Image 1 (tube, rainbow, N blue to C red):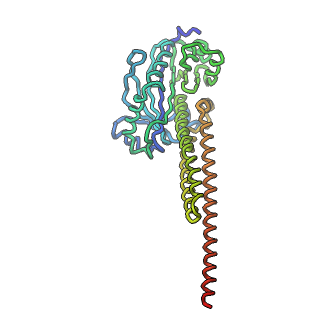
Image 2: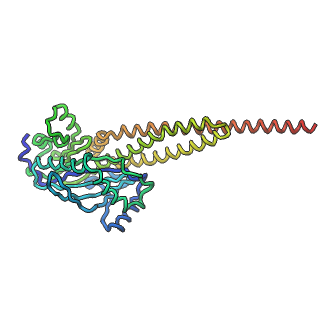
Image 3: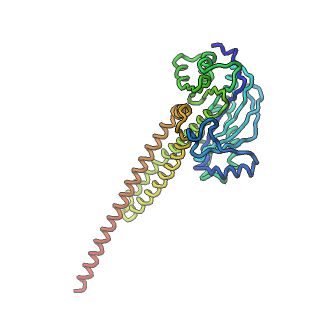
Length: 374
């Protein structure tokens, strides 16, 4: 590969960090709060080059700019643009962007790795929590049941090229540069099998665009300069965060549910029906809330006609294993639903049993009273 002659005229490297911060977010209230406290301009996200009827957000997330920051990457101080995007199902996606202008391909790769080291998973956690605290302080009134901490999070890196020093189509670009090196972050040569697996999810629509997806990094070559591909990758990561939240919530709830069921069954008959009914109502509320929110997450991005973005979006979901998590959540919700139905039946059965006992007692009392008259 001869990447030495390739120069990136314009592009950027982006570090994403996504947090679950609340059960839900009132985006209209957050927008008003942001304007009142910060005076900044916010906007509702839409896909720039895609017709709304083809592929659109279910509820457009709210994007808000933060103050630029300085980062030291490989000993050089650079200015990074920072923004946050809020999703109505409770996720905040922070983005740190470093522009690339007239940089050789090797410098682009080095910058990508340096950003990963500085603010990626191995970087200081305080960097992201400080940014998140700024956001939460302003939008706190818009948060429904805010999370106690920011422990549930996901990270992702995007390397985007908008213009090169020479026109190249996707095939030529893949031949001229080592995309496996960029996407793996490894400095040692990879095996042919590892390279093939790493580049397996590659997609192009026009001859001169390219998207390559991996678990934690993606490369985007987009000469038209739109951000639609990056946006759908972010949505997939936001869905991953939320499904992880509900998967963990149900993992914690199931053992407690089994314990409460046993406690209810061990109670004396007079109390058991009430306990069963109370537990059934609690499980019903859990199922209703989880179902409502998971449907919001599922419908975060509605794919109708845009075949290319639909493929990229589906591939991003598969790469991040979102369908597997969604299926896991569905299975656990099914267990809770079945338990709720069983508890409801048992509560009804216990009530019927109490009613029968009461009827028998009334009959006995009536007989005793009748006999006592003679």
